[in-house]
Amino acid sequence: MTGDRTLRVQGGASHREARGAVFAVRLGSRCAPSRASPVAVLPRVIRILPPRRAGLASSAPYSATPVNLYTLNGNRMFDRAQSTIANVDPEIFAAIEQENRRQEDHIELIASENYTSPAVMAAQGSQLTNKYAEGYPGKRYYGGCEYVDVVEQLAIDRVKQLFGAEAANVQPNSGSQANQGVFFAMLKPGDTIMGMSLAHGGHLTHGSPVNMSGKWFNVVSYGLNENEDIDYEAAEKLAQEHKPKLIVAGASAFALKIDFERLAKIAKSVGAYLMVDMAHYAGLIAAGVYPNPVPHADFVTTTTHKSLRGPRGGVILMKAEYEKPINSAIFPGIQGGPLMHVIAAKAVAFKEALSPEFKEYQQKVVENARVLAETLVKRGLRIVSGRTESHVMLVDLRAKNITGKAAEAALGAAHITVNKNAIPNDPEKPFVTSGVRLGSPAMTTRGFGPAEAEQVGNLIADVLENPEDAATIERVRAQVAELTKRFPVYR
Image: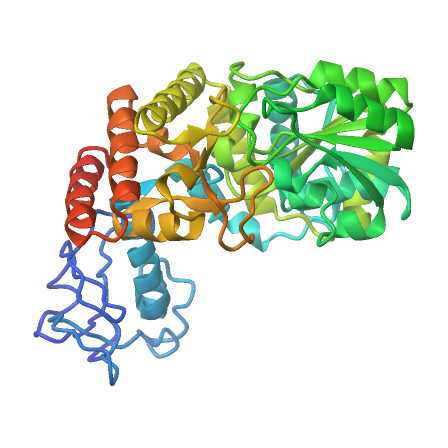
C-alpha cells in the first residue's frame, strides 16, 4: 500500500492506472477472467488475487493483499468506493467469482434451484439488512420502522394478489419454518398428521421420522398407486381410519398435477385442516399453468426461490380467520426479528411474478420439461409416473445400470448439474439411490427453448451410457460450453 488512494498490485499497475481493467481471481488454481457477475460489476473495482500460499500452484500473474480500510486516512469501512468485497476479503470474493463462473458455465438442472434477477439481489443486499423490526406493519416493538413497514406491506399485498389469498405472512425465513409455523399454530405435540411419504416424493417436513414433524407428531403417510400417481383412495381410507388433525399435500419429487380439491374434500370429511406445501410448484401456480391450492386449503406454504425465482425464504398464505394465530406462531412463536432485506427481495420477486413475461416464462418451463422427459424416454430411460406435468421429473436409472450417485458425478464432470434422488420403493440407500431428479426452471431462465431441452436430454443420455469414458465426458462438456456461451445467465 503506497498511499490513501493507490493500491499497488504485482506487475506495477496502480488502482488509478488499472481502472476499467479486469484481473483474474485465483483460489487455488489459475482461472481466466469471467463474465461479469452481479458482485463484480461495480465501477472502478479490480478483481484482486489473494496472496499465493504454499502448496497452491498457480501461474496467475497478479496478487495483492487486502486493503486495510482503517488506515486509509481514517475509517473507510463505509466508503462504497473502497469497501468492496474484493478489497476487504479477497478470499470470499474469489469464492464468489468461482461460484459465478460455475453457474455460468454449467447447465443447472436441480429442480429446486433457479437464478434470481439483479433487482432481487440488489434488494437483498440493501441497507434494510441493518433494520430490526420485531412485530408486523404498524405494530412494531422498535422505532424507525416506517419505511420497512411499507416494504413488508407491499410484499404482503403482492403475494396475496399473486395467488388470490385472503391473508399472508411473509416473515418465515424458509419453507421449513413456514411449515413449522402452521404446525406450531394449529397442533399440539402428539397430534396426528397425514402427509406424503418421503420415499414416494414427499418432503422431510411432511412427517419424516428424522424431522421435527416426525418427532413431535403421530404421522400417517400416503403414497403412490401402481400407476405412480397419488393414491387418493388409499389416502381417504387412511384419513377415515386415523382421523388426522391436519393433512399435508405437496411434494419435492412428484411430476404430475396434484388434485388439491380432492384432498380438501378428504380433509373436510374427517374434520382435518388441509395444508398445502406448494414450494416446488409456486411459480407455475402463480402463472396459472398448475392447479392453485389456495381456494381449497386452509393454509398454503411455499418457498420464494425455486420456480418462483425470488430470494431464499418462505411465505404462509391462509384463510383470513387463521391470520392471527399464524402471525403469533411466526413472531414471537418461532422467530424473532424478520429479515427485512429478504422481505424486500421477496416483494421485488412478487412484482416480477405478476408480469405477463413471467407467465410466458412458466409456460416455457413446462414445455421444456416435457421435451426433456420425452427425449430421455426415447433414449431408453424411464420417467417415474410416465411423464411430467410440471417443471420436475424423476428419472429411473436402472435400465442404464448406473446409480444416482454415479450419474450425478458423471454428469457433473460434464458440467451438467443434477441431484441424485430416490425413486419409489428404491432398493438403494439414500446417499446412493436409483434415480436423479431433473428440473427445467433454471435452464429456461437462461433462455433455453425446446431445441436446447432436446439437446440437453441427448447429452444426459450420452453421459449415462458412457459414464466412465473420458472422451464422451469431454465431448459433452464442450457442447455444454457452447450452449452456456450462447445463453449466459447474467449479461
